[in-house]
Length: 394
Image 1 (tube, rainbow, N blue to C red):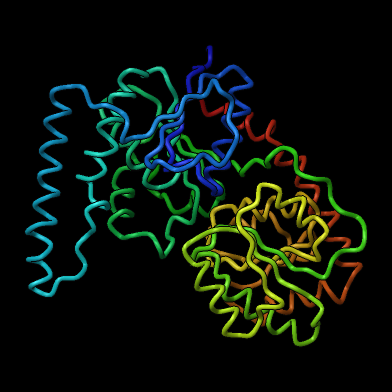
Image 2: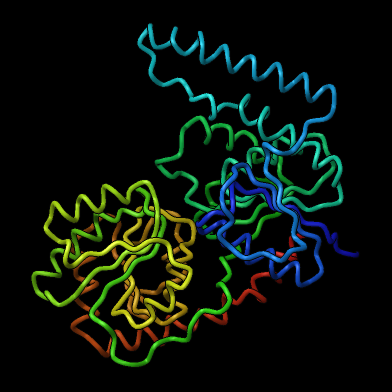
């Protein structure tokens, strides 16, 4: 049977981030295999990753709703949301209720602003395979596809029970994901959560980006690194606390953290509060971060939960000795075997994280062994191999 050659990726944006990078890497590879690729985004943000000119980008707010029914539905839903903000929410507050959902976390908002324009796209592209990345885009895609004969693939990109996800969004997701025709997960832990899934599913790890530098084999700088989106799930305060303990014994070491995010200002303030400004440094997102860190002493991930961390995979691939928390979602545990190609520590355990970093510093032979074993991930996660597995879903 001939494969469908039209693919639509639904995602929040193509700004910096792990899922965004995976979509860009897959799009480039599948486009080179002569697939027709469209990328549909919820939000208007600068595109952080290179894409071929032949890939078409859509933004939900720019996509027209042309049918009479669609226009009436959007008008009605917008009026309902206006009534919620103007009258219902103040009334609930008056009676002491503080748990009502925000307007942009309701089914009405998703349907009016995302599902309606996406629905017109899917009606005009019934021959495509539609992949949803990130929870909000999955919801919008599956809402839009109801009643349309199109193959929809639900793609989980994080810990399904992440504590920072609004409960109303999780409730909508858990009610709609069963409508998908297939599902892709990064880890077995993620797949195990969706017990009512009845469609075909696959566990496919993230591909490595192309052009990563080769592993460094010389004497490493006395610097510990991390590069990630600076939000609460990364638990960077834990890393700073563990490094503070390490610094008391190894004052010539520094900690350098690359990335952007809502926690950055508070993390800088925490560093100043601890008097670590001369030892802990924050850098912006850098496209050449791998070249900058390849000769560092180690990479340390302190996350509380992840899907499958791209920064961890890339650190392994360039041969950095890695210390990672065994975070919820199972990604670190799937890729790292204790003291074979990295060191795993319990979530939130500052003493264990400190011990892992100290062990790498004090045992150069172990550091060299971890580096060599870690780099073997390059073959396993090459874009060619991973794209083959995605292609099997189409």
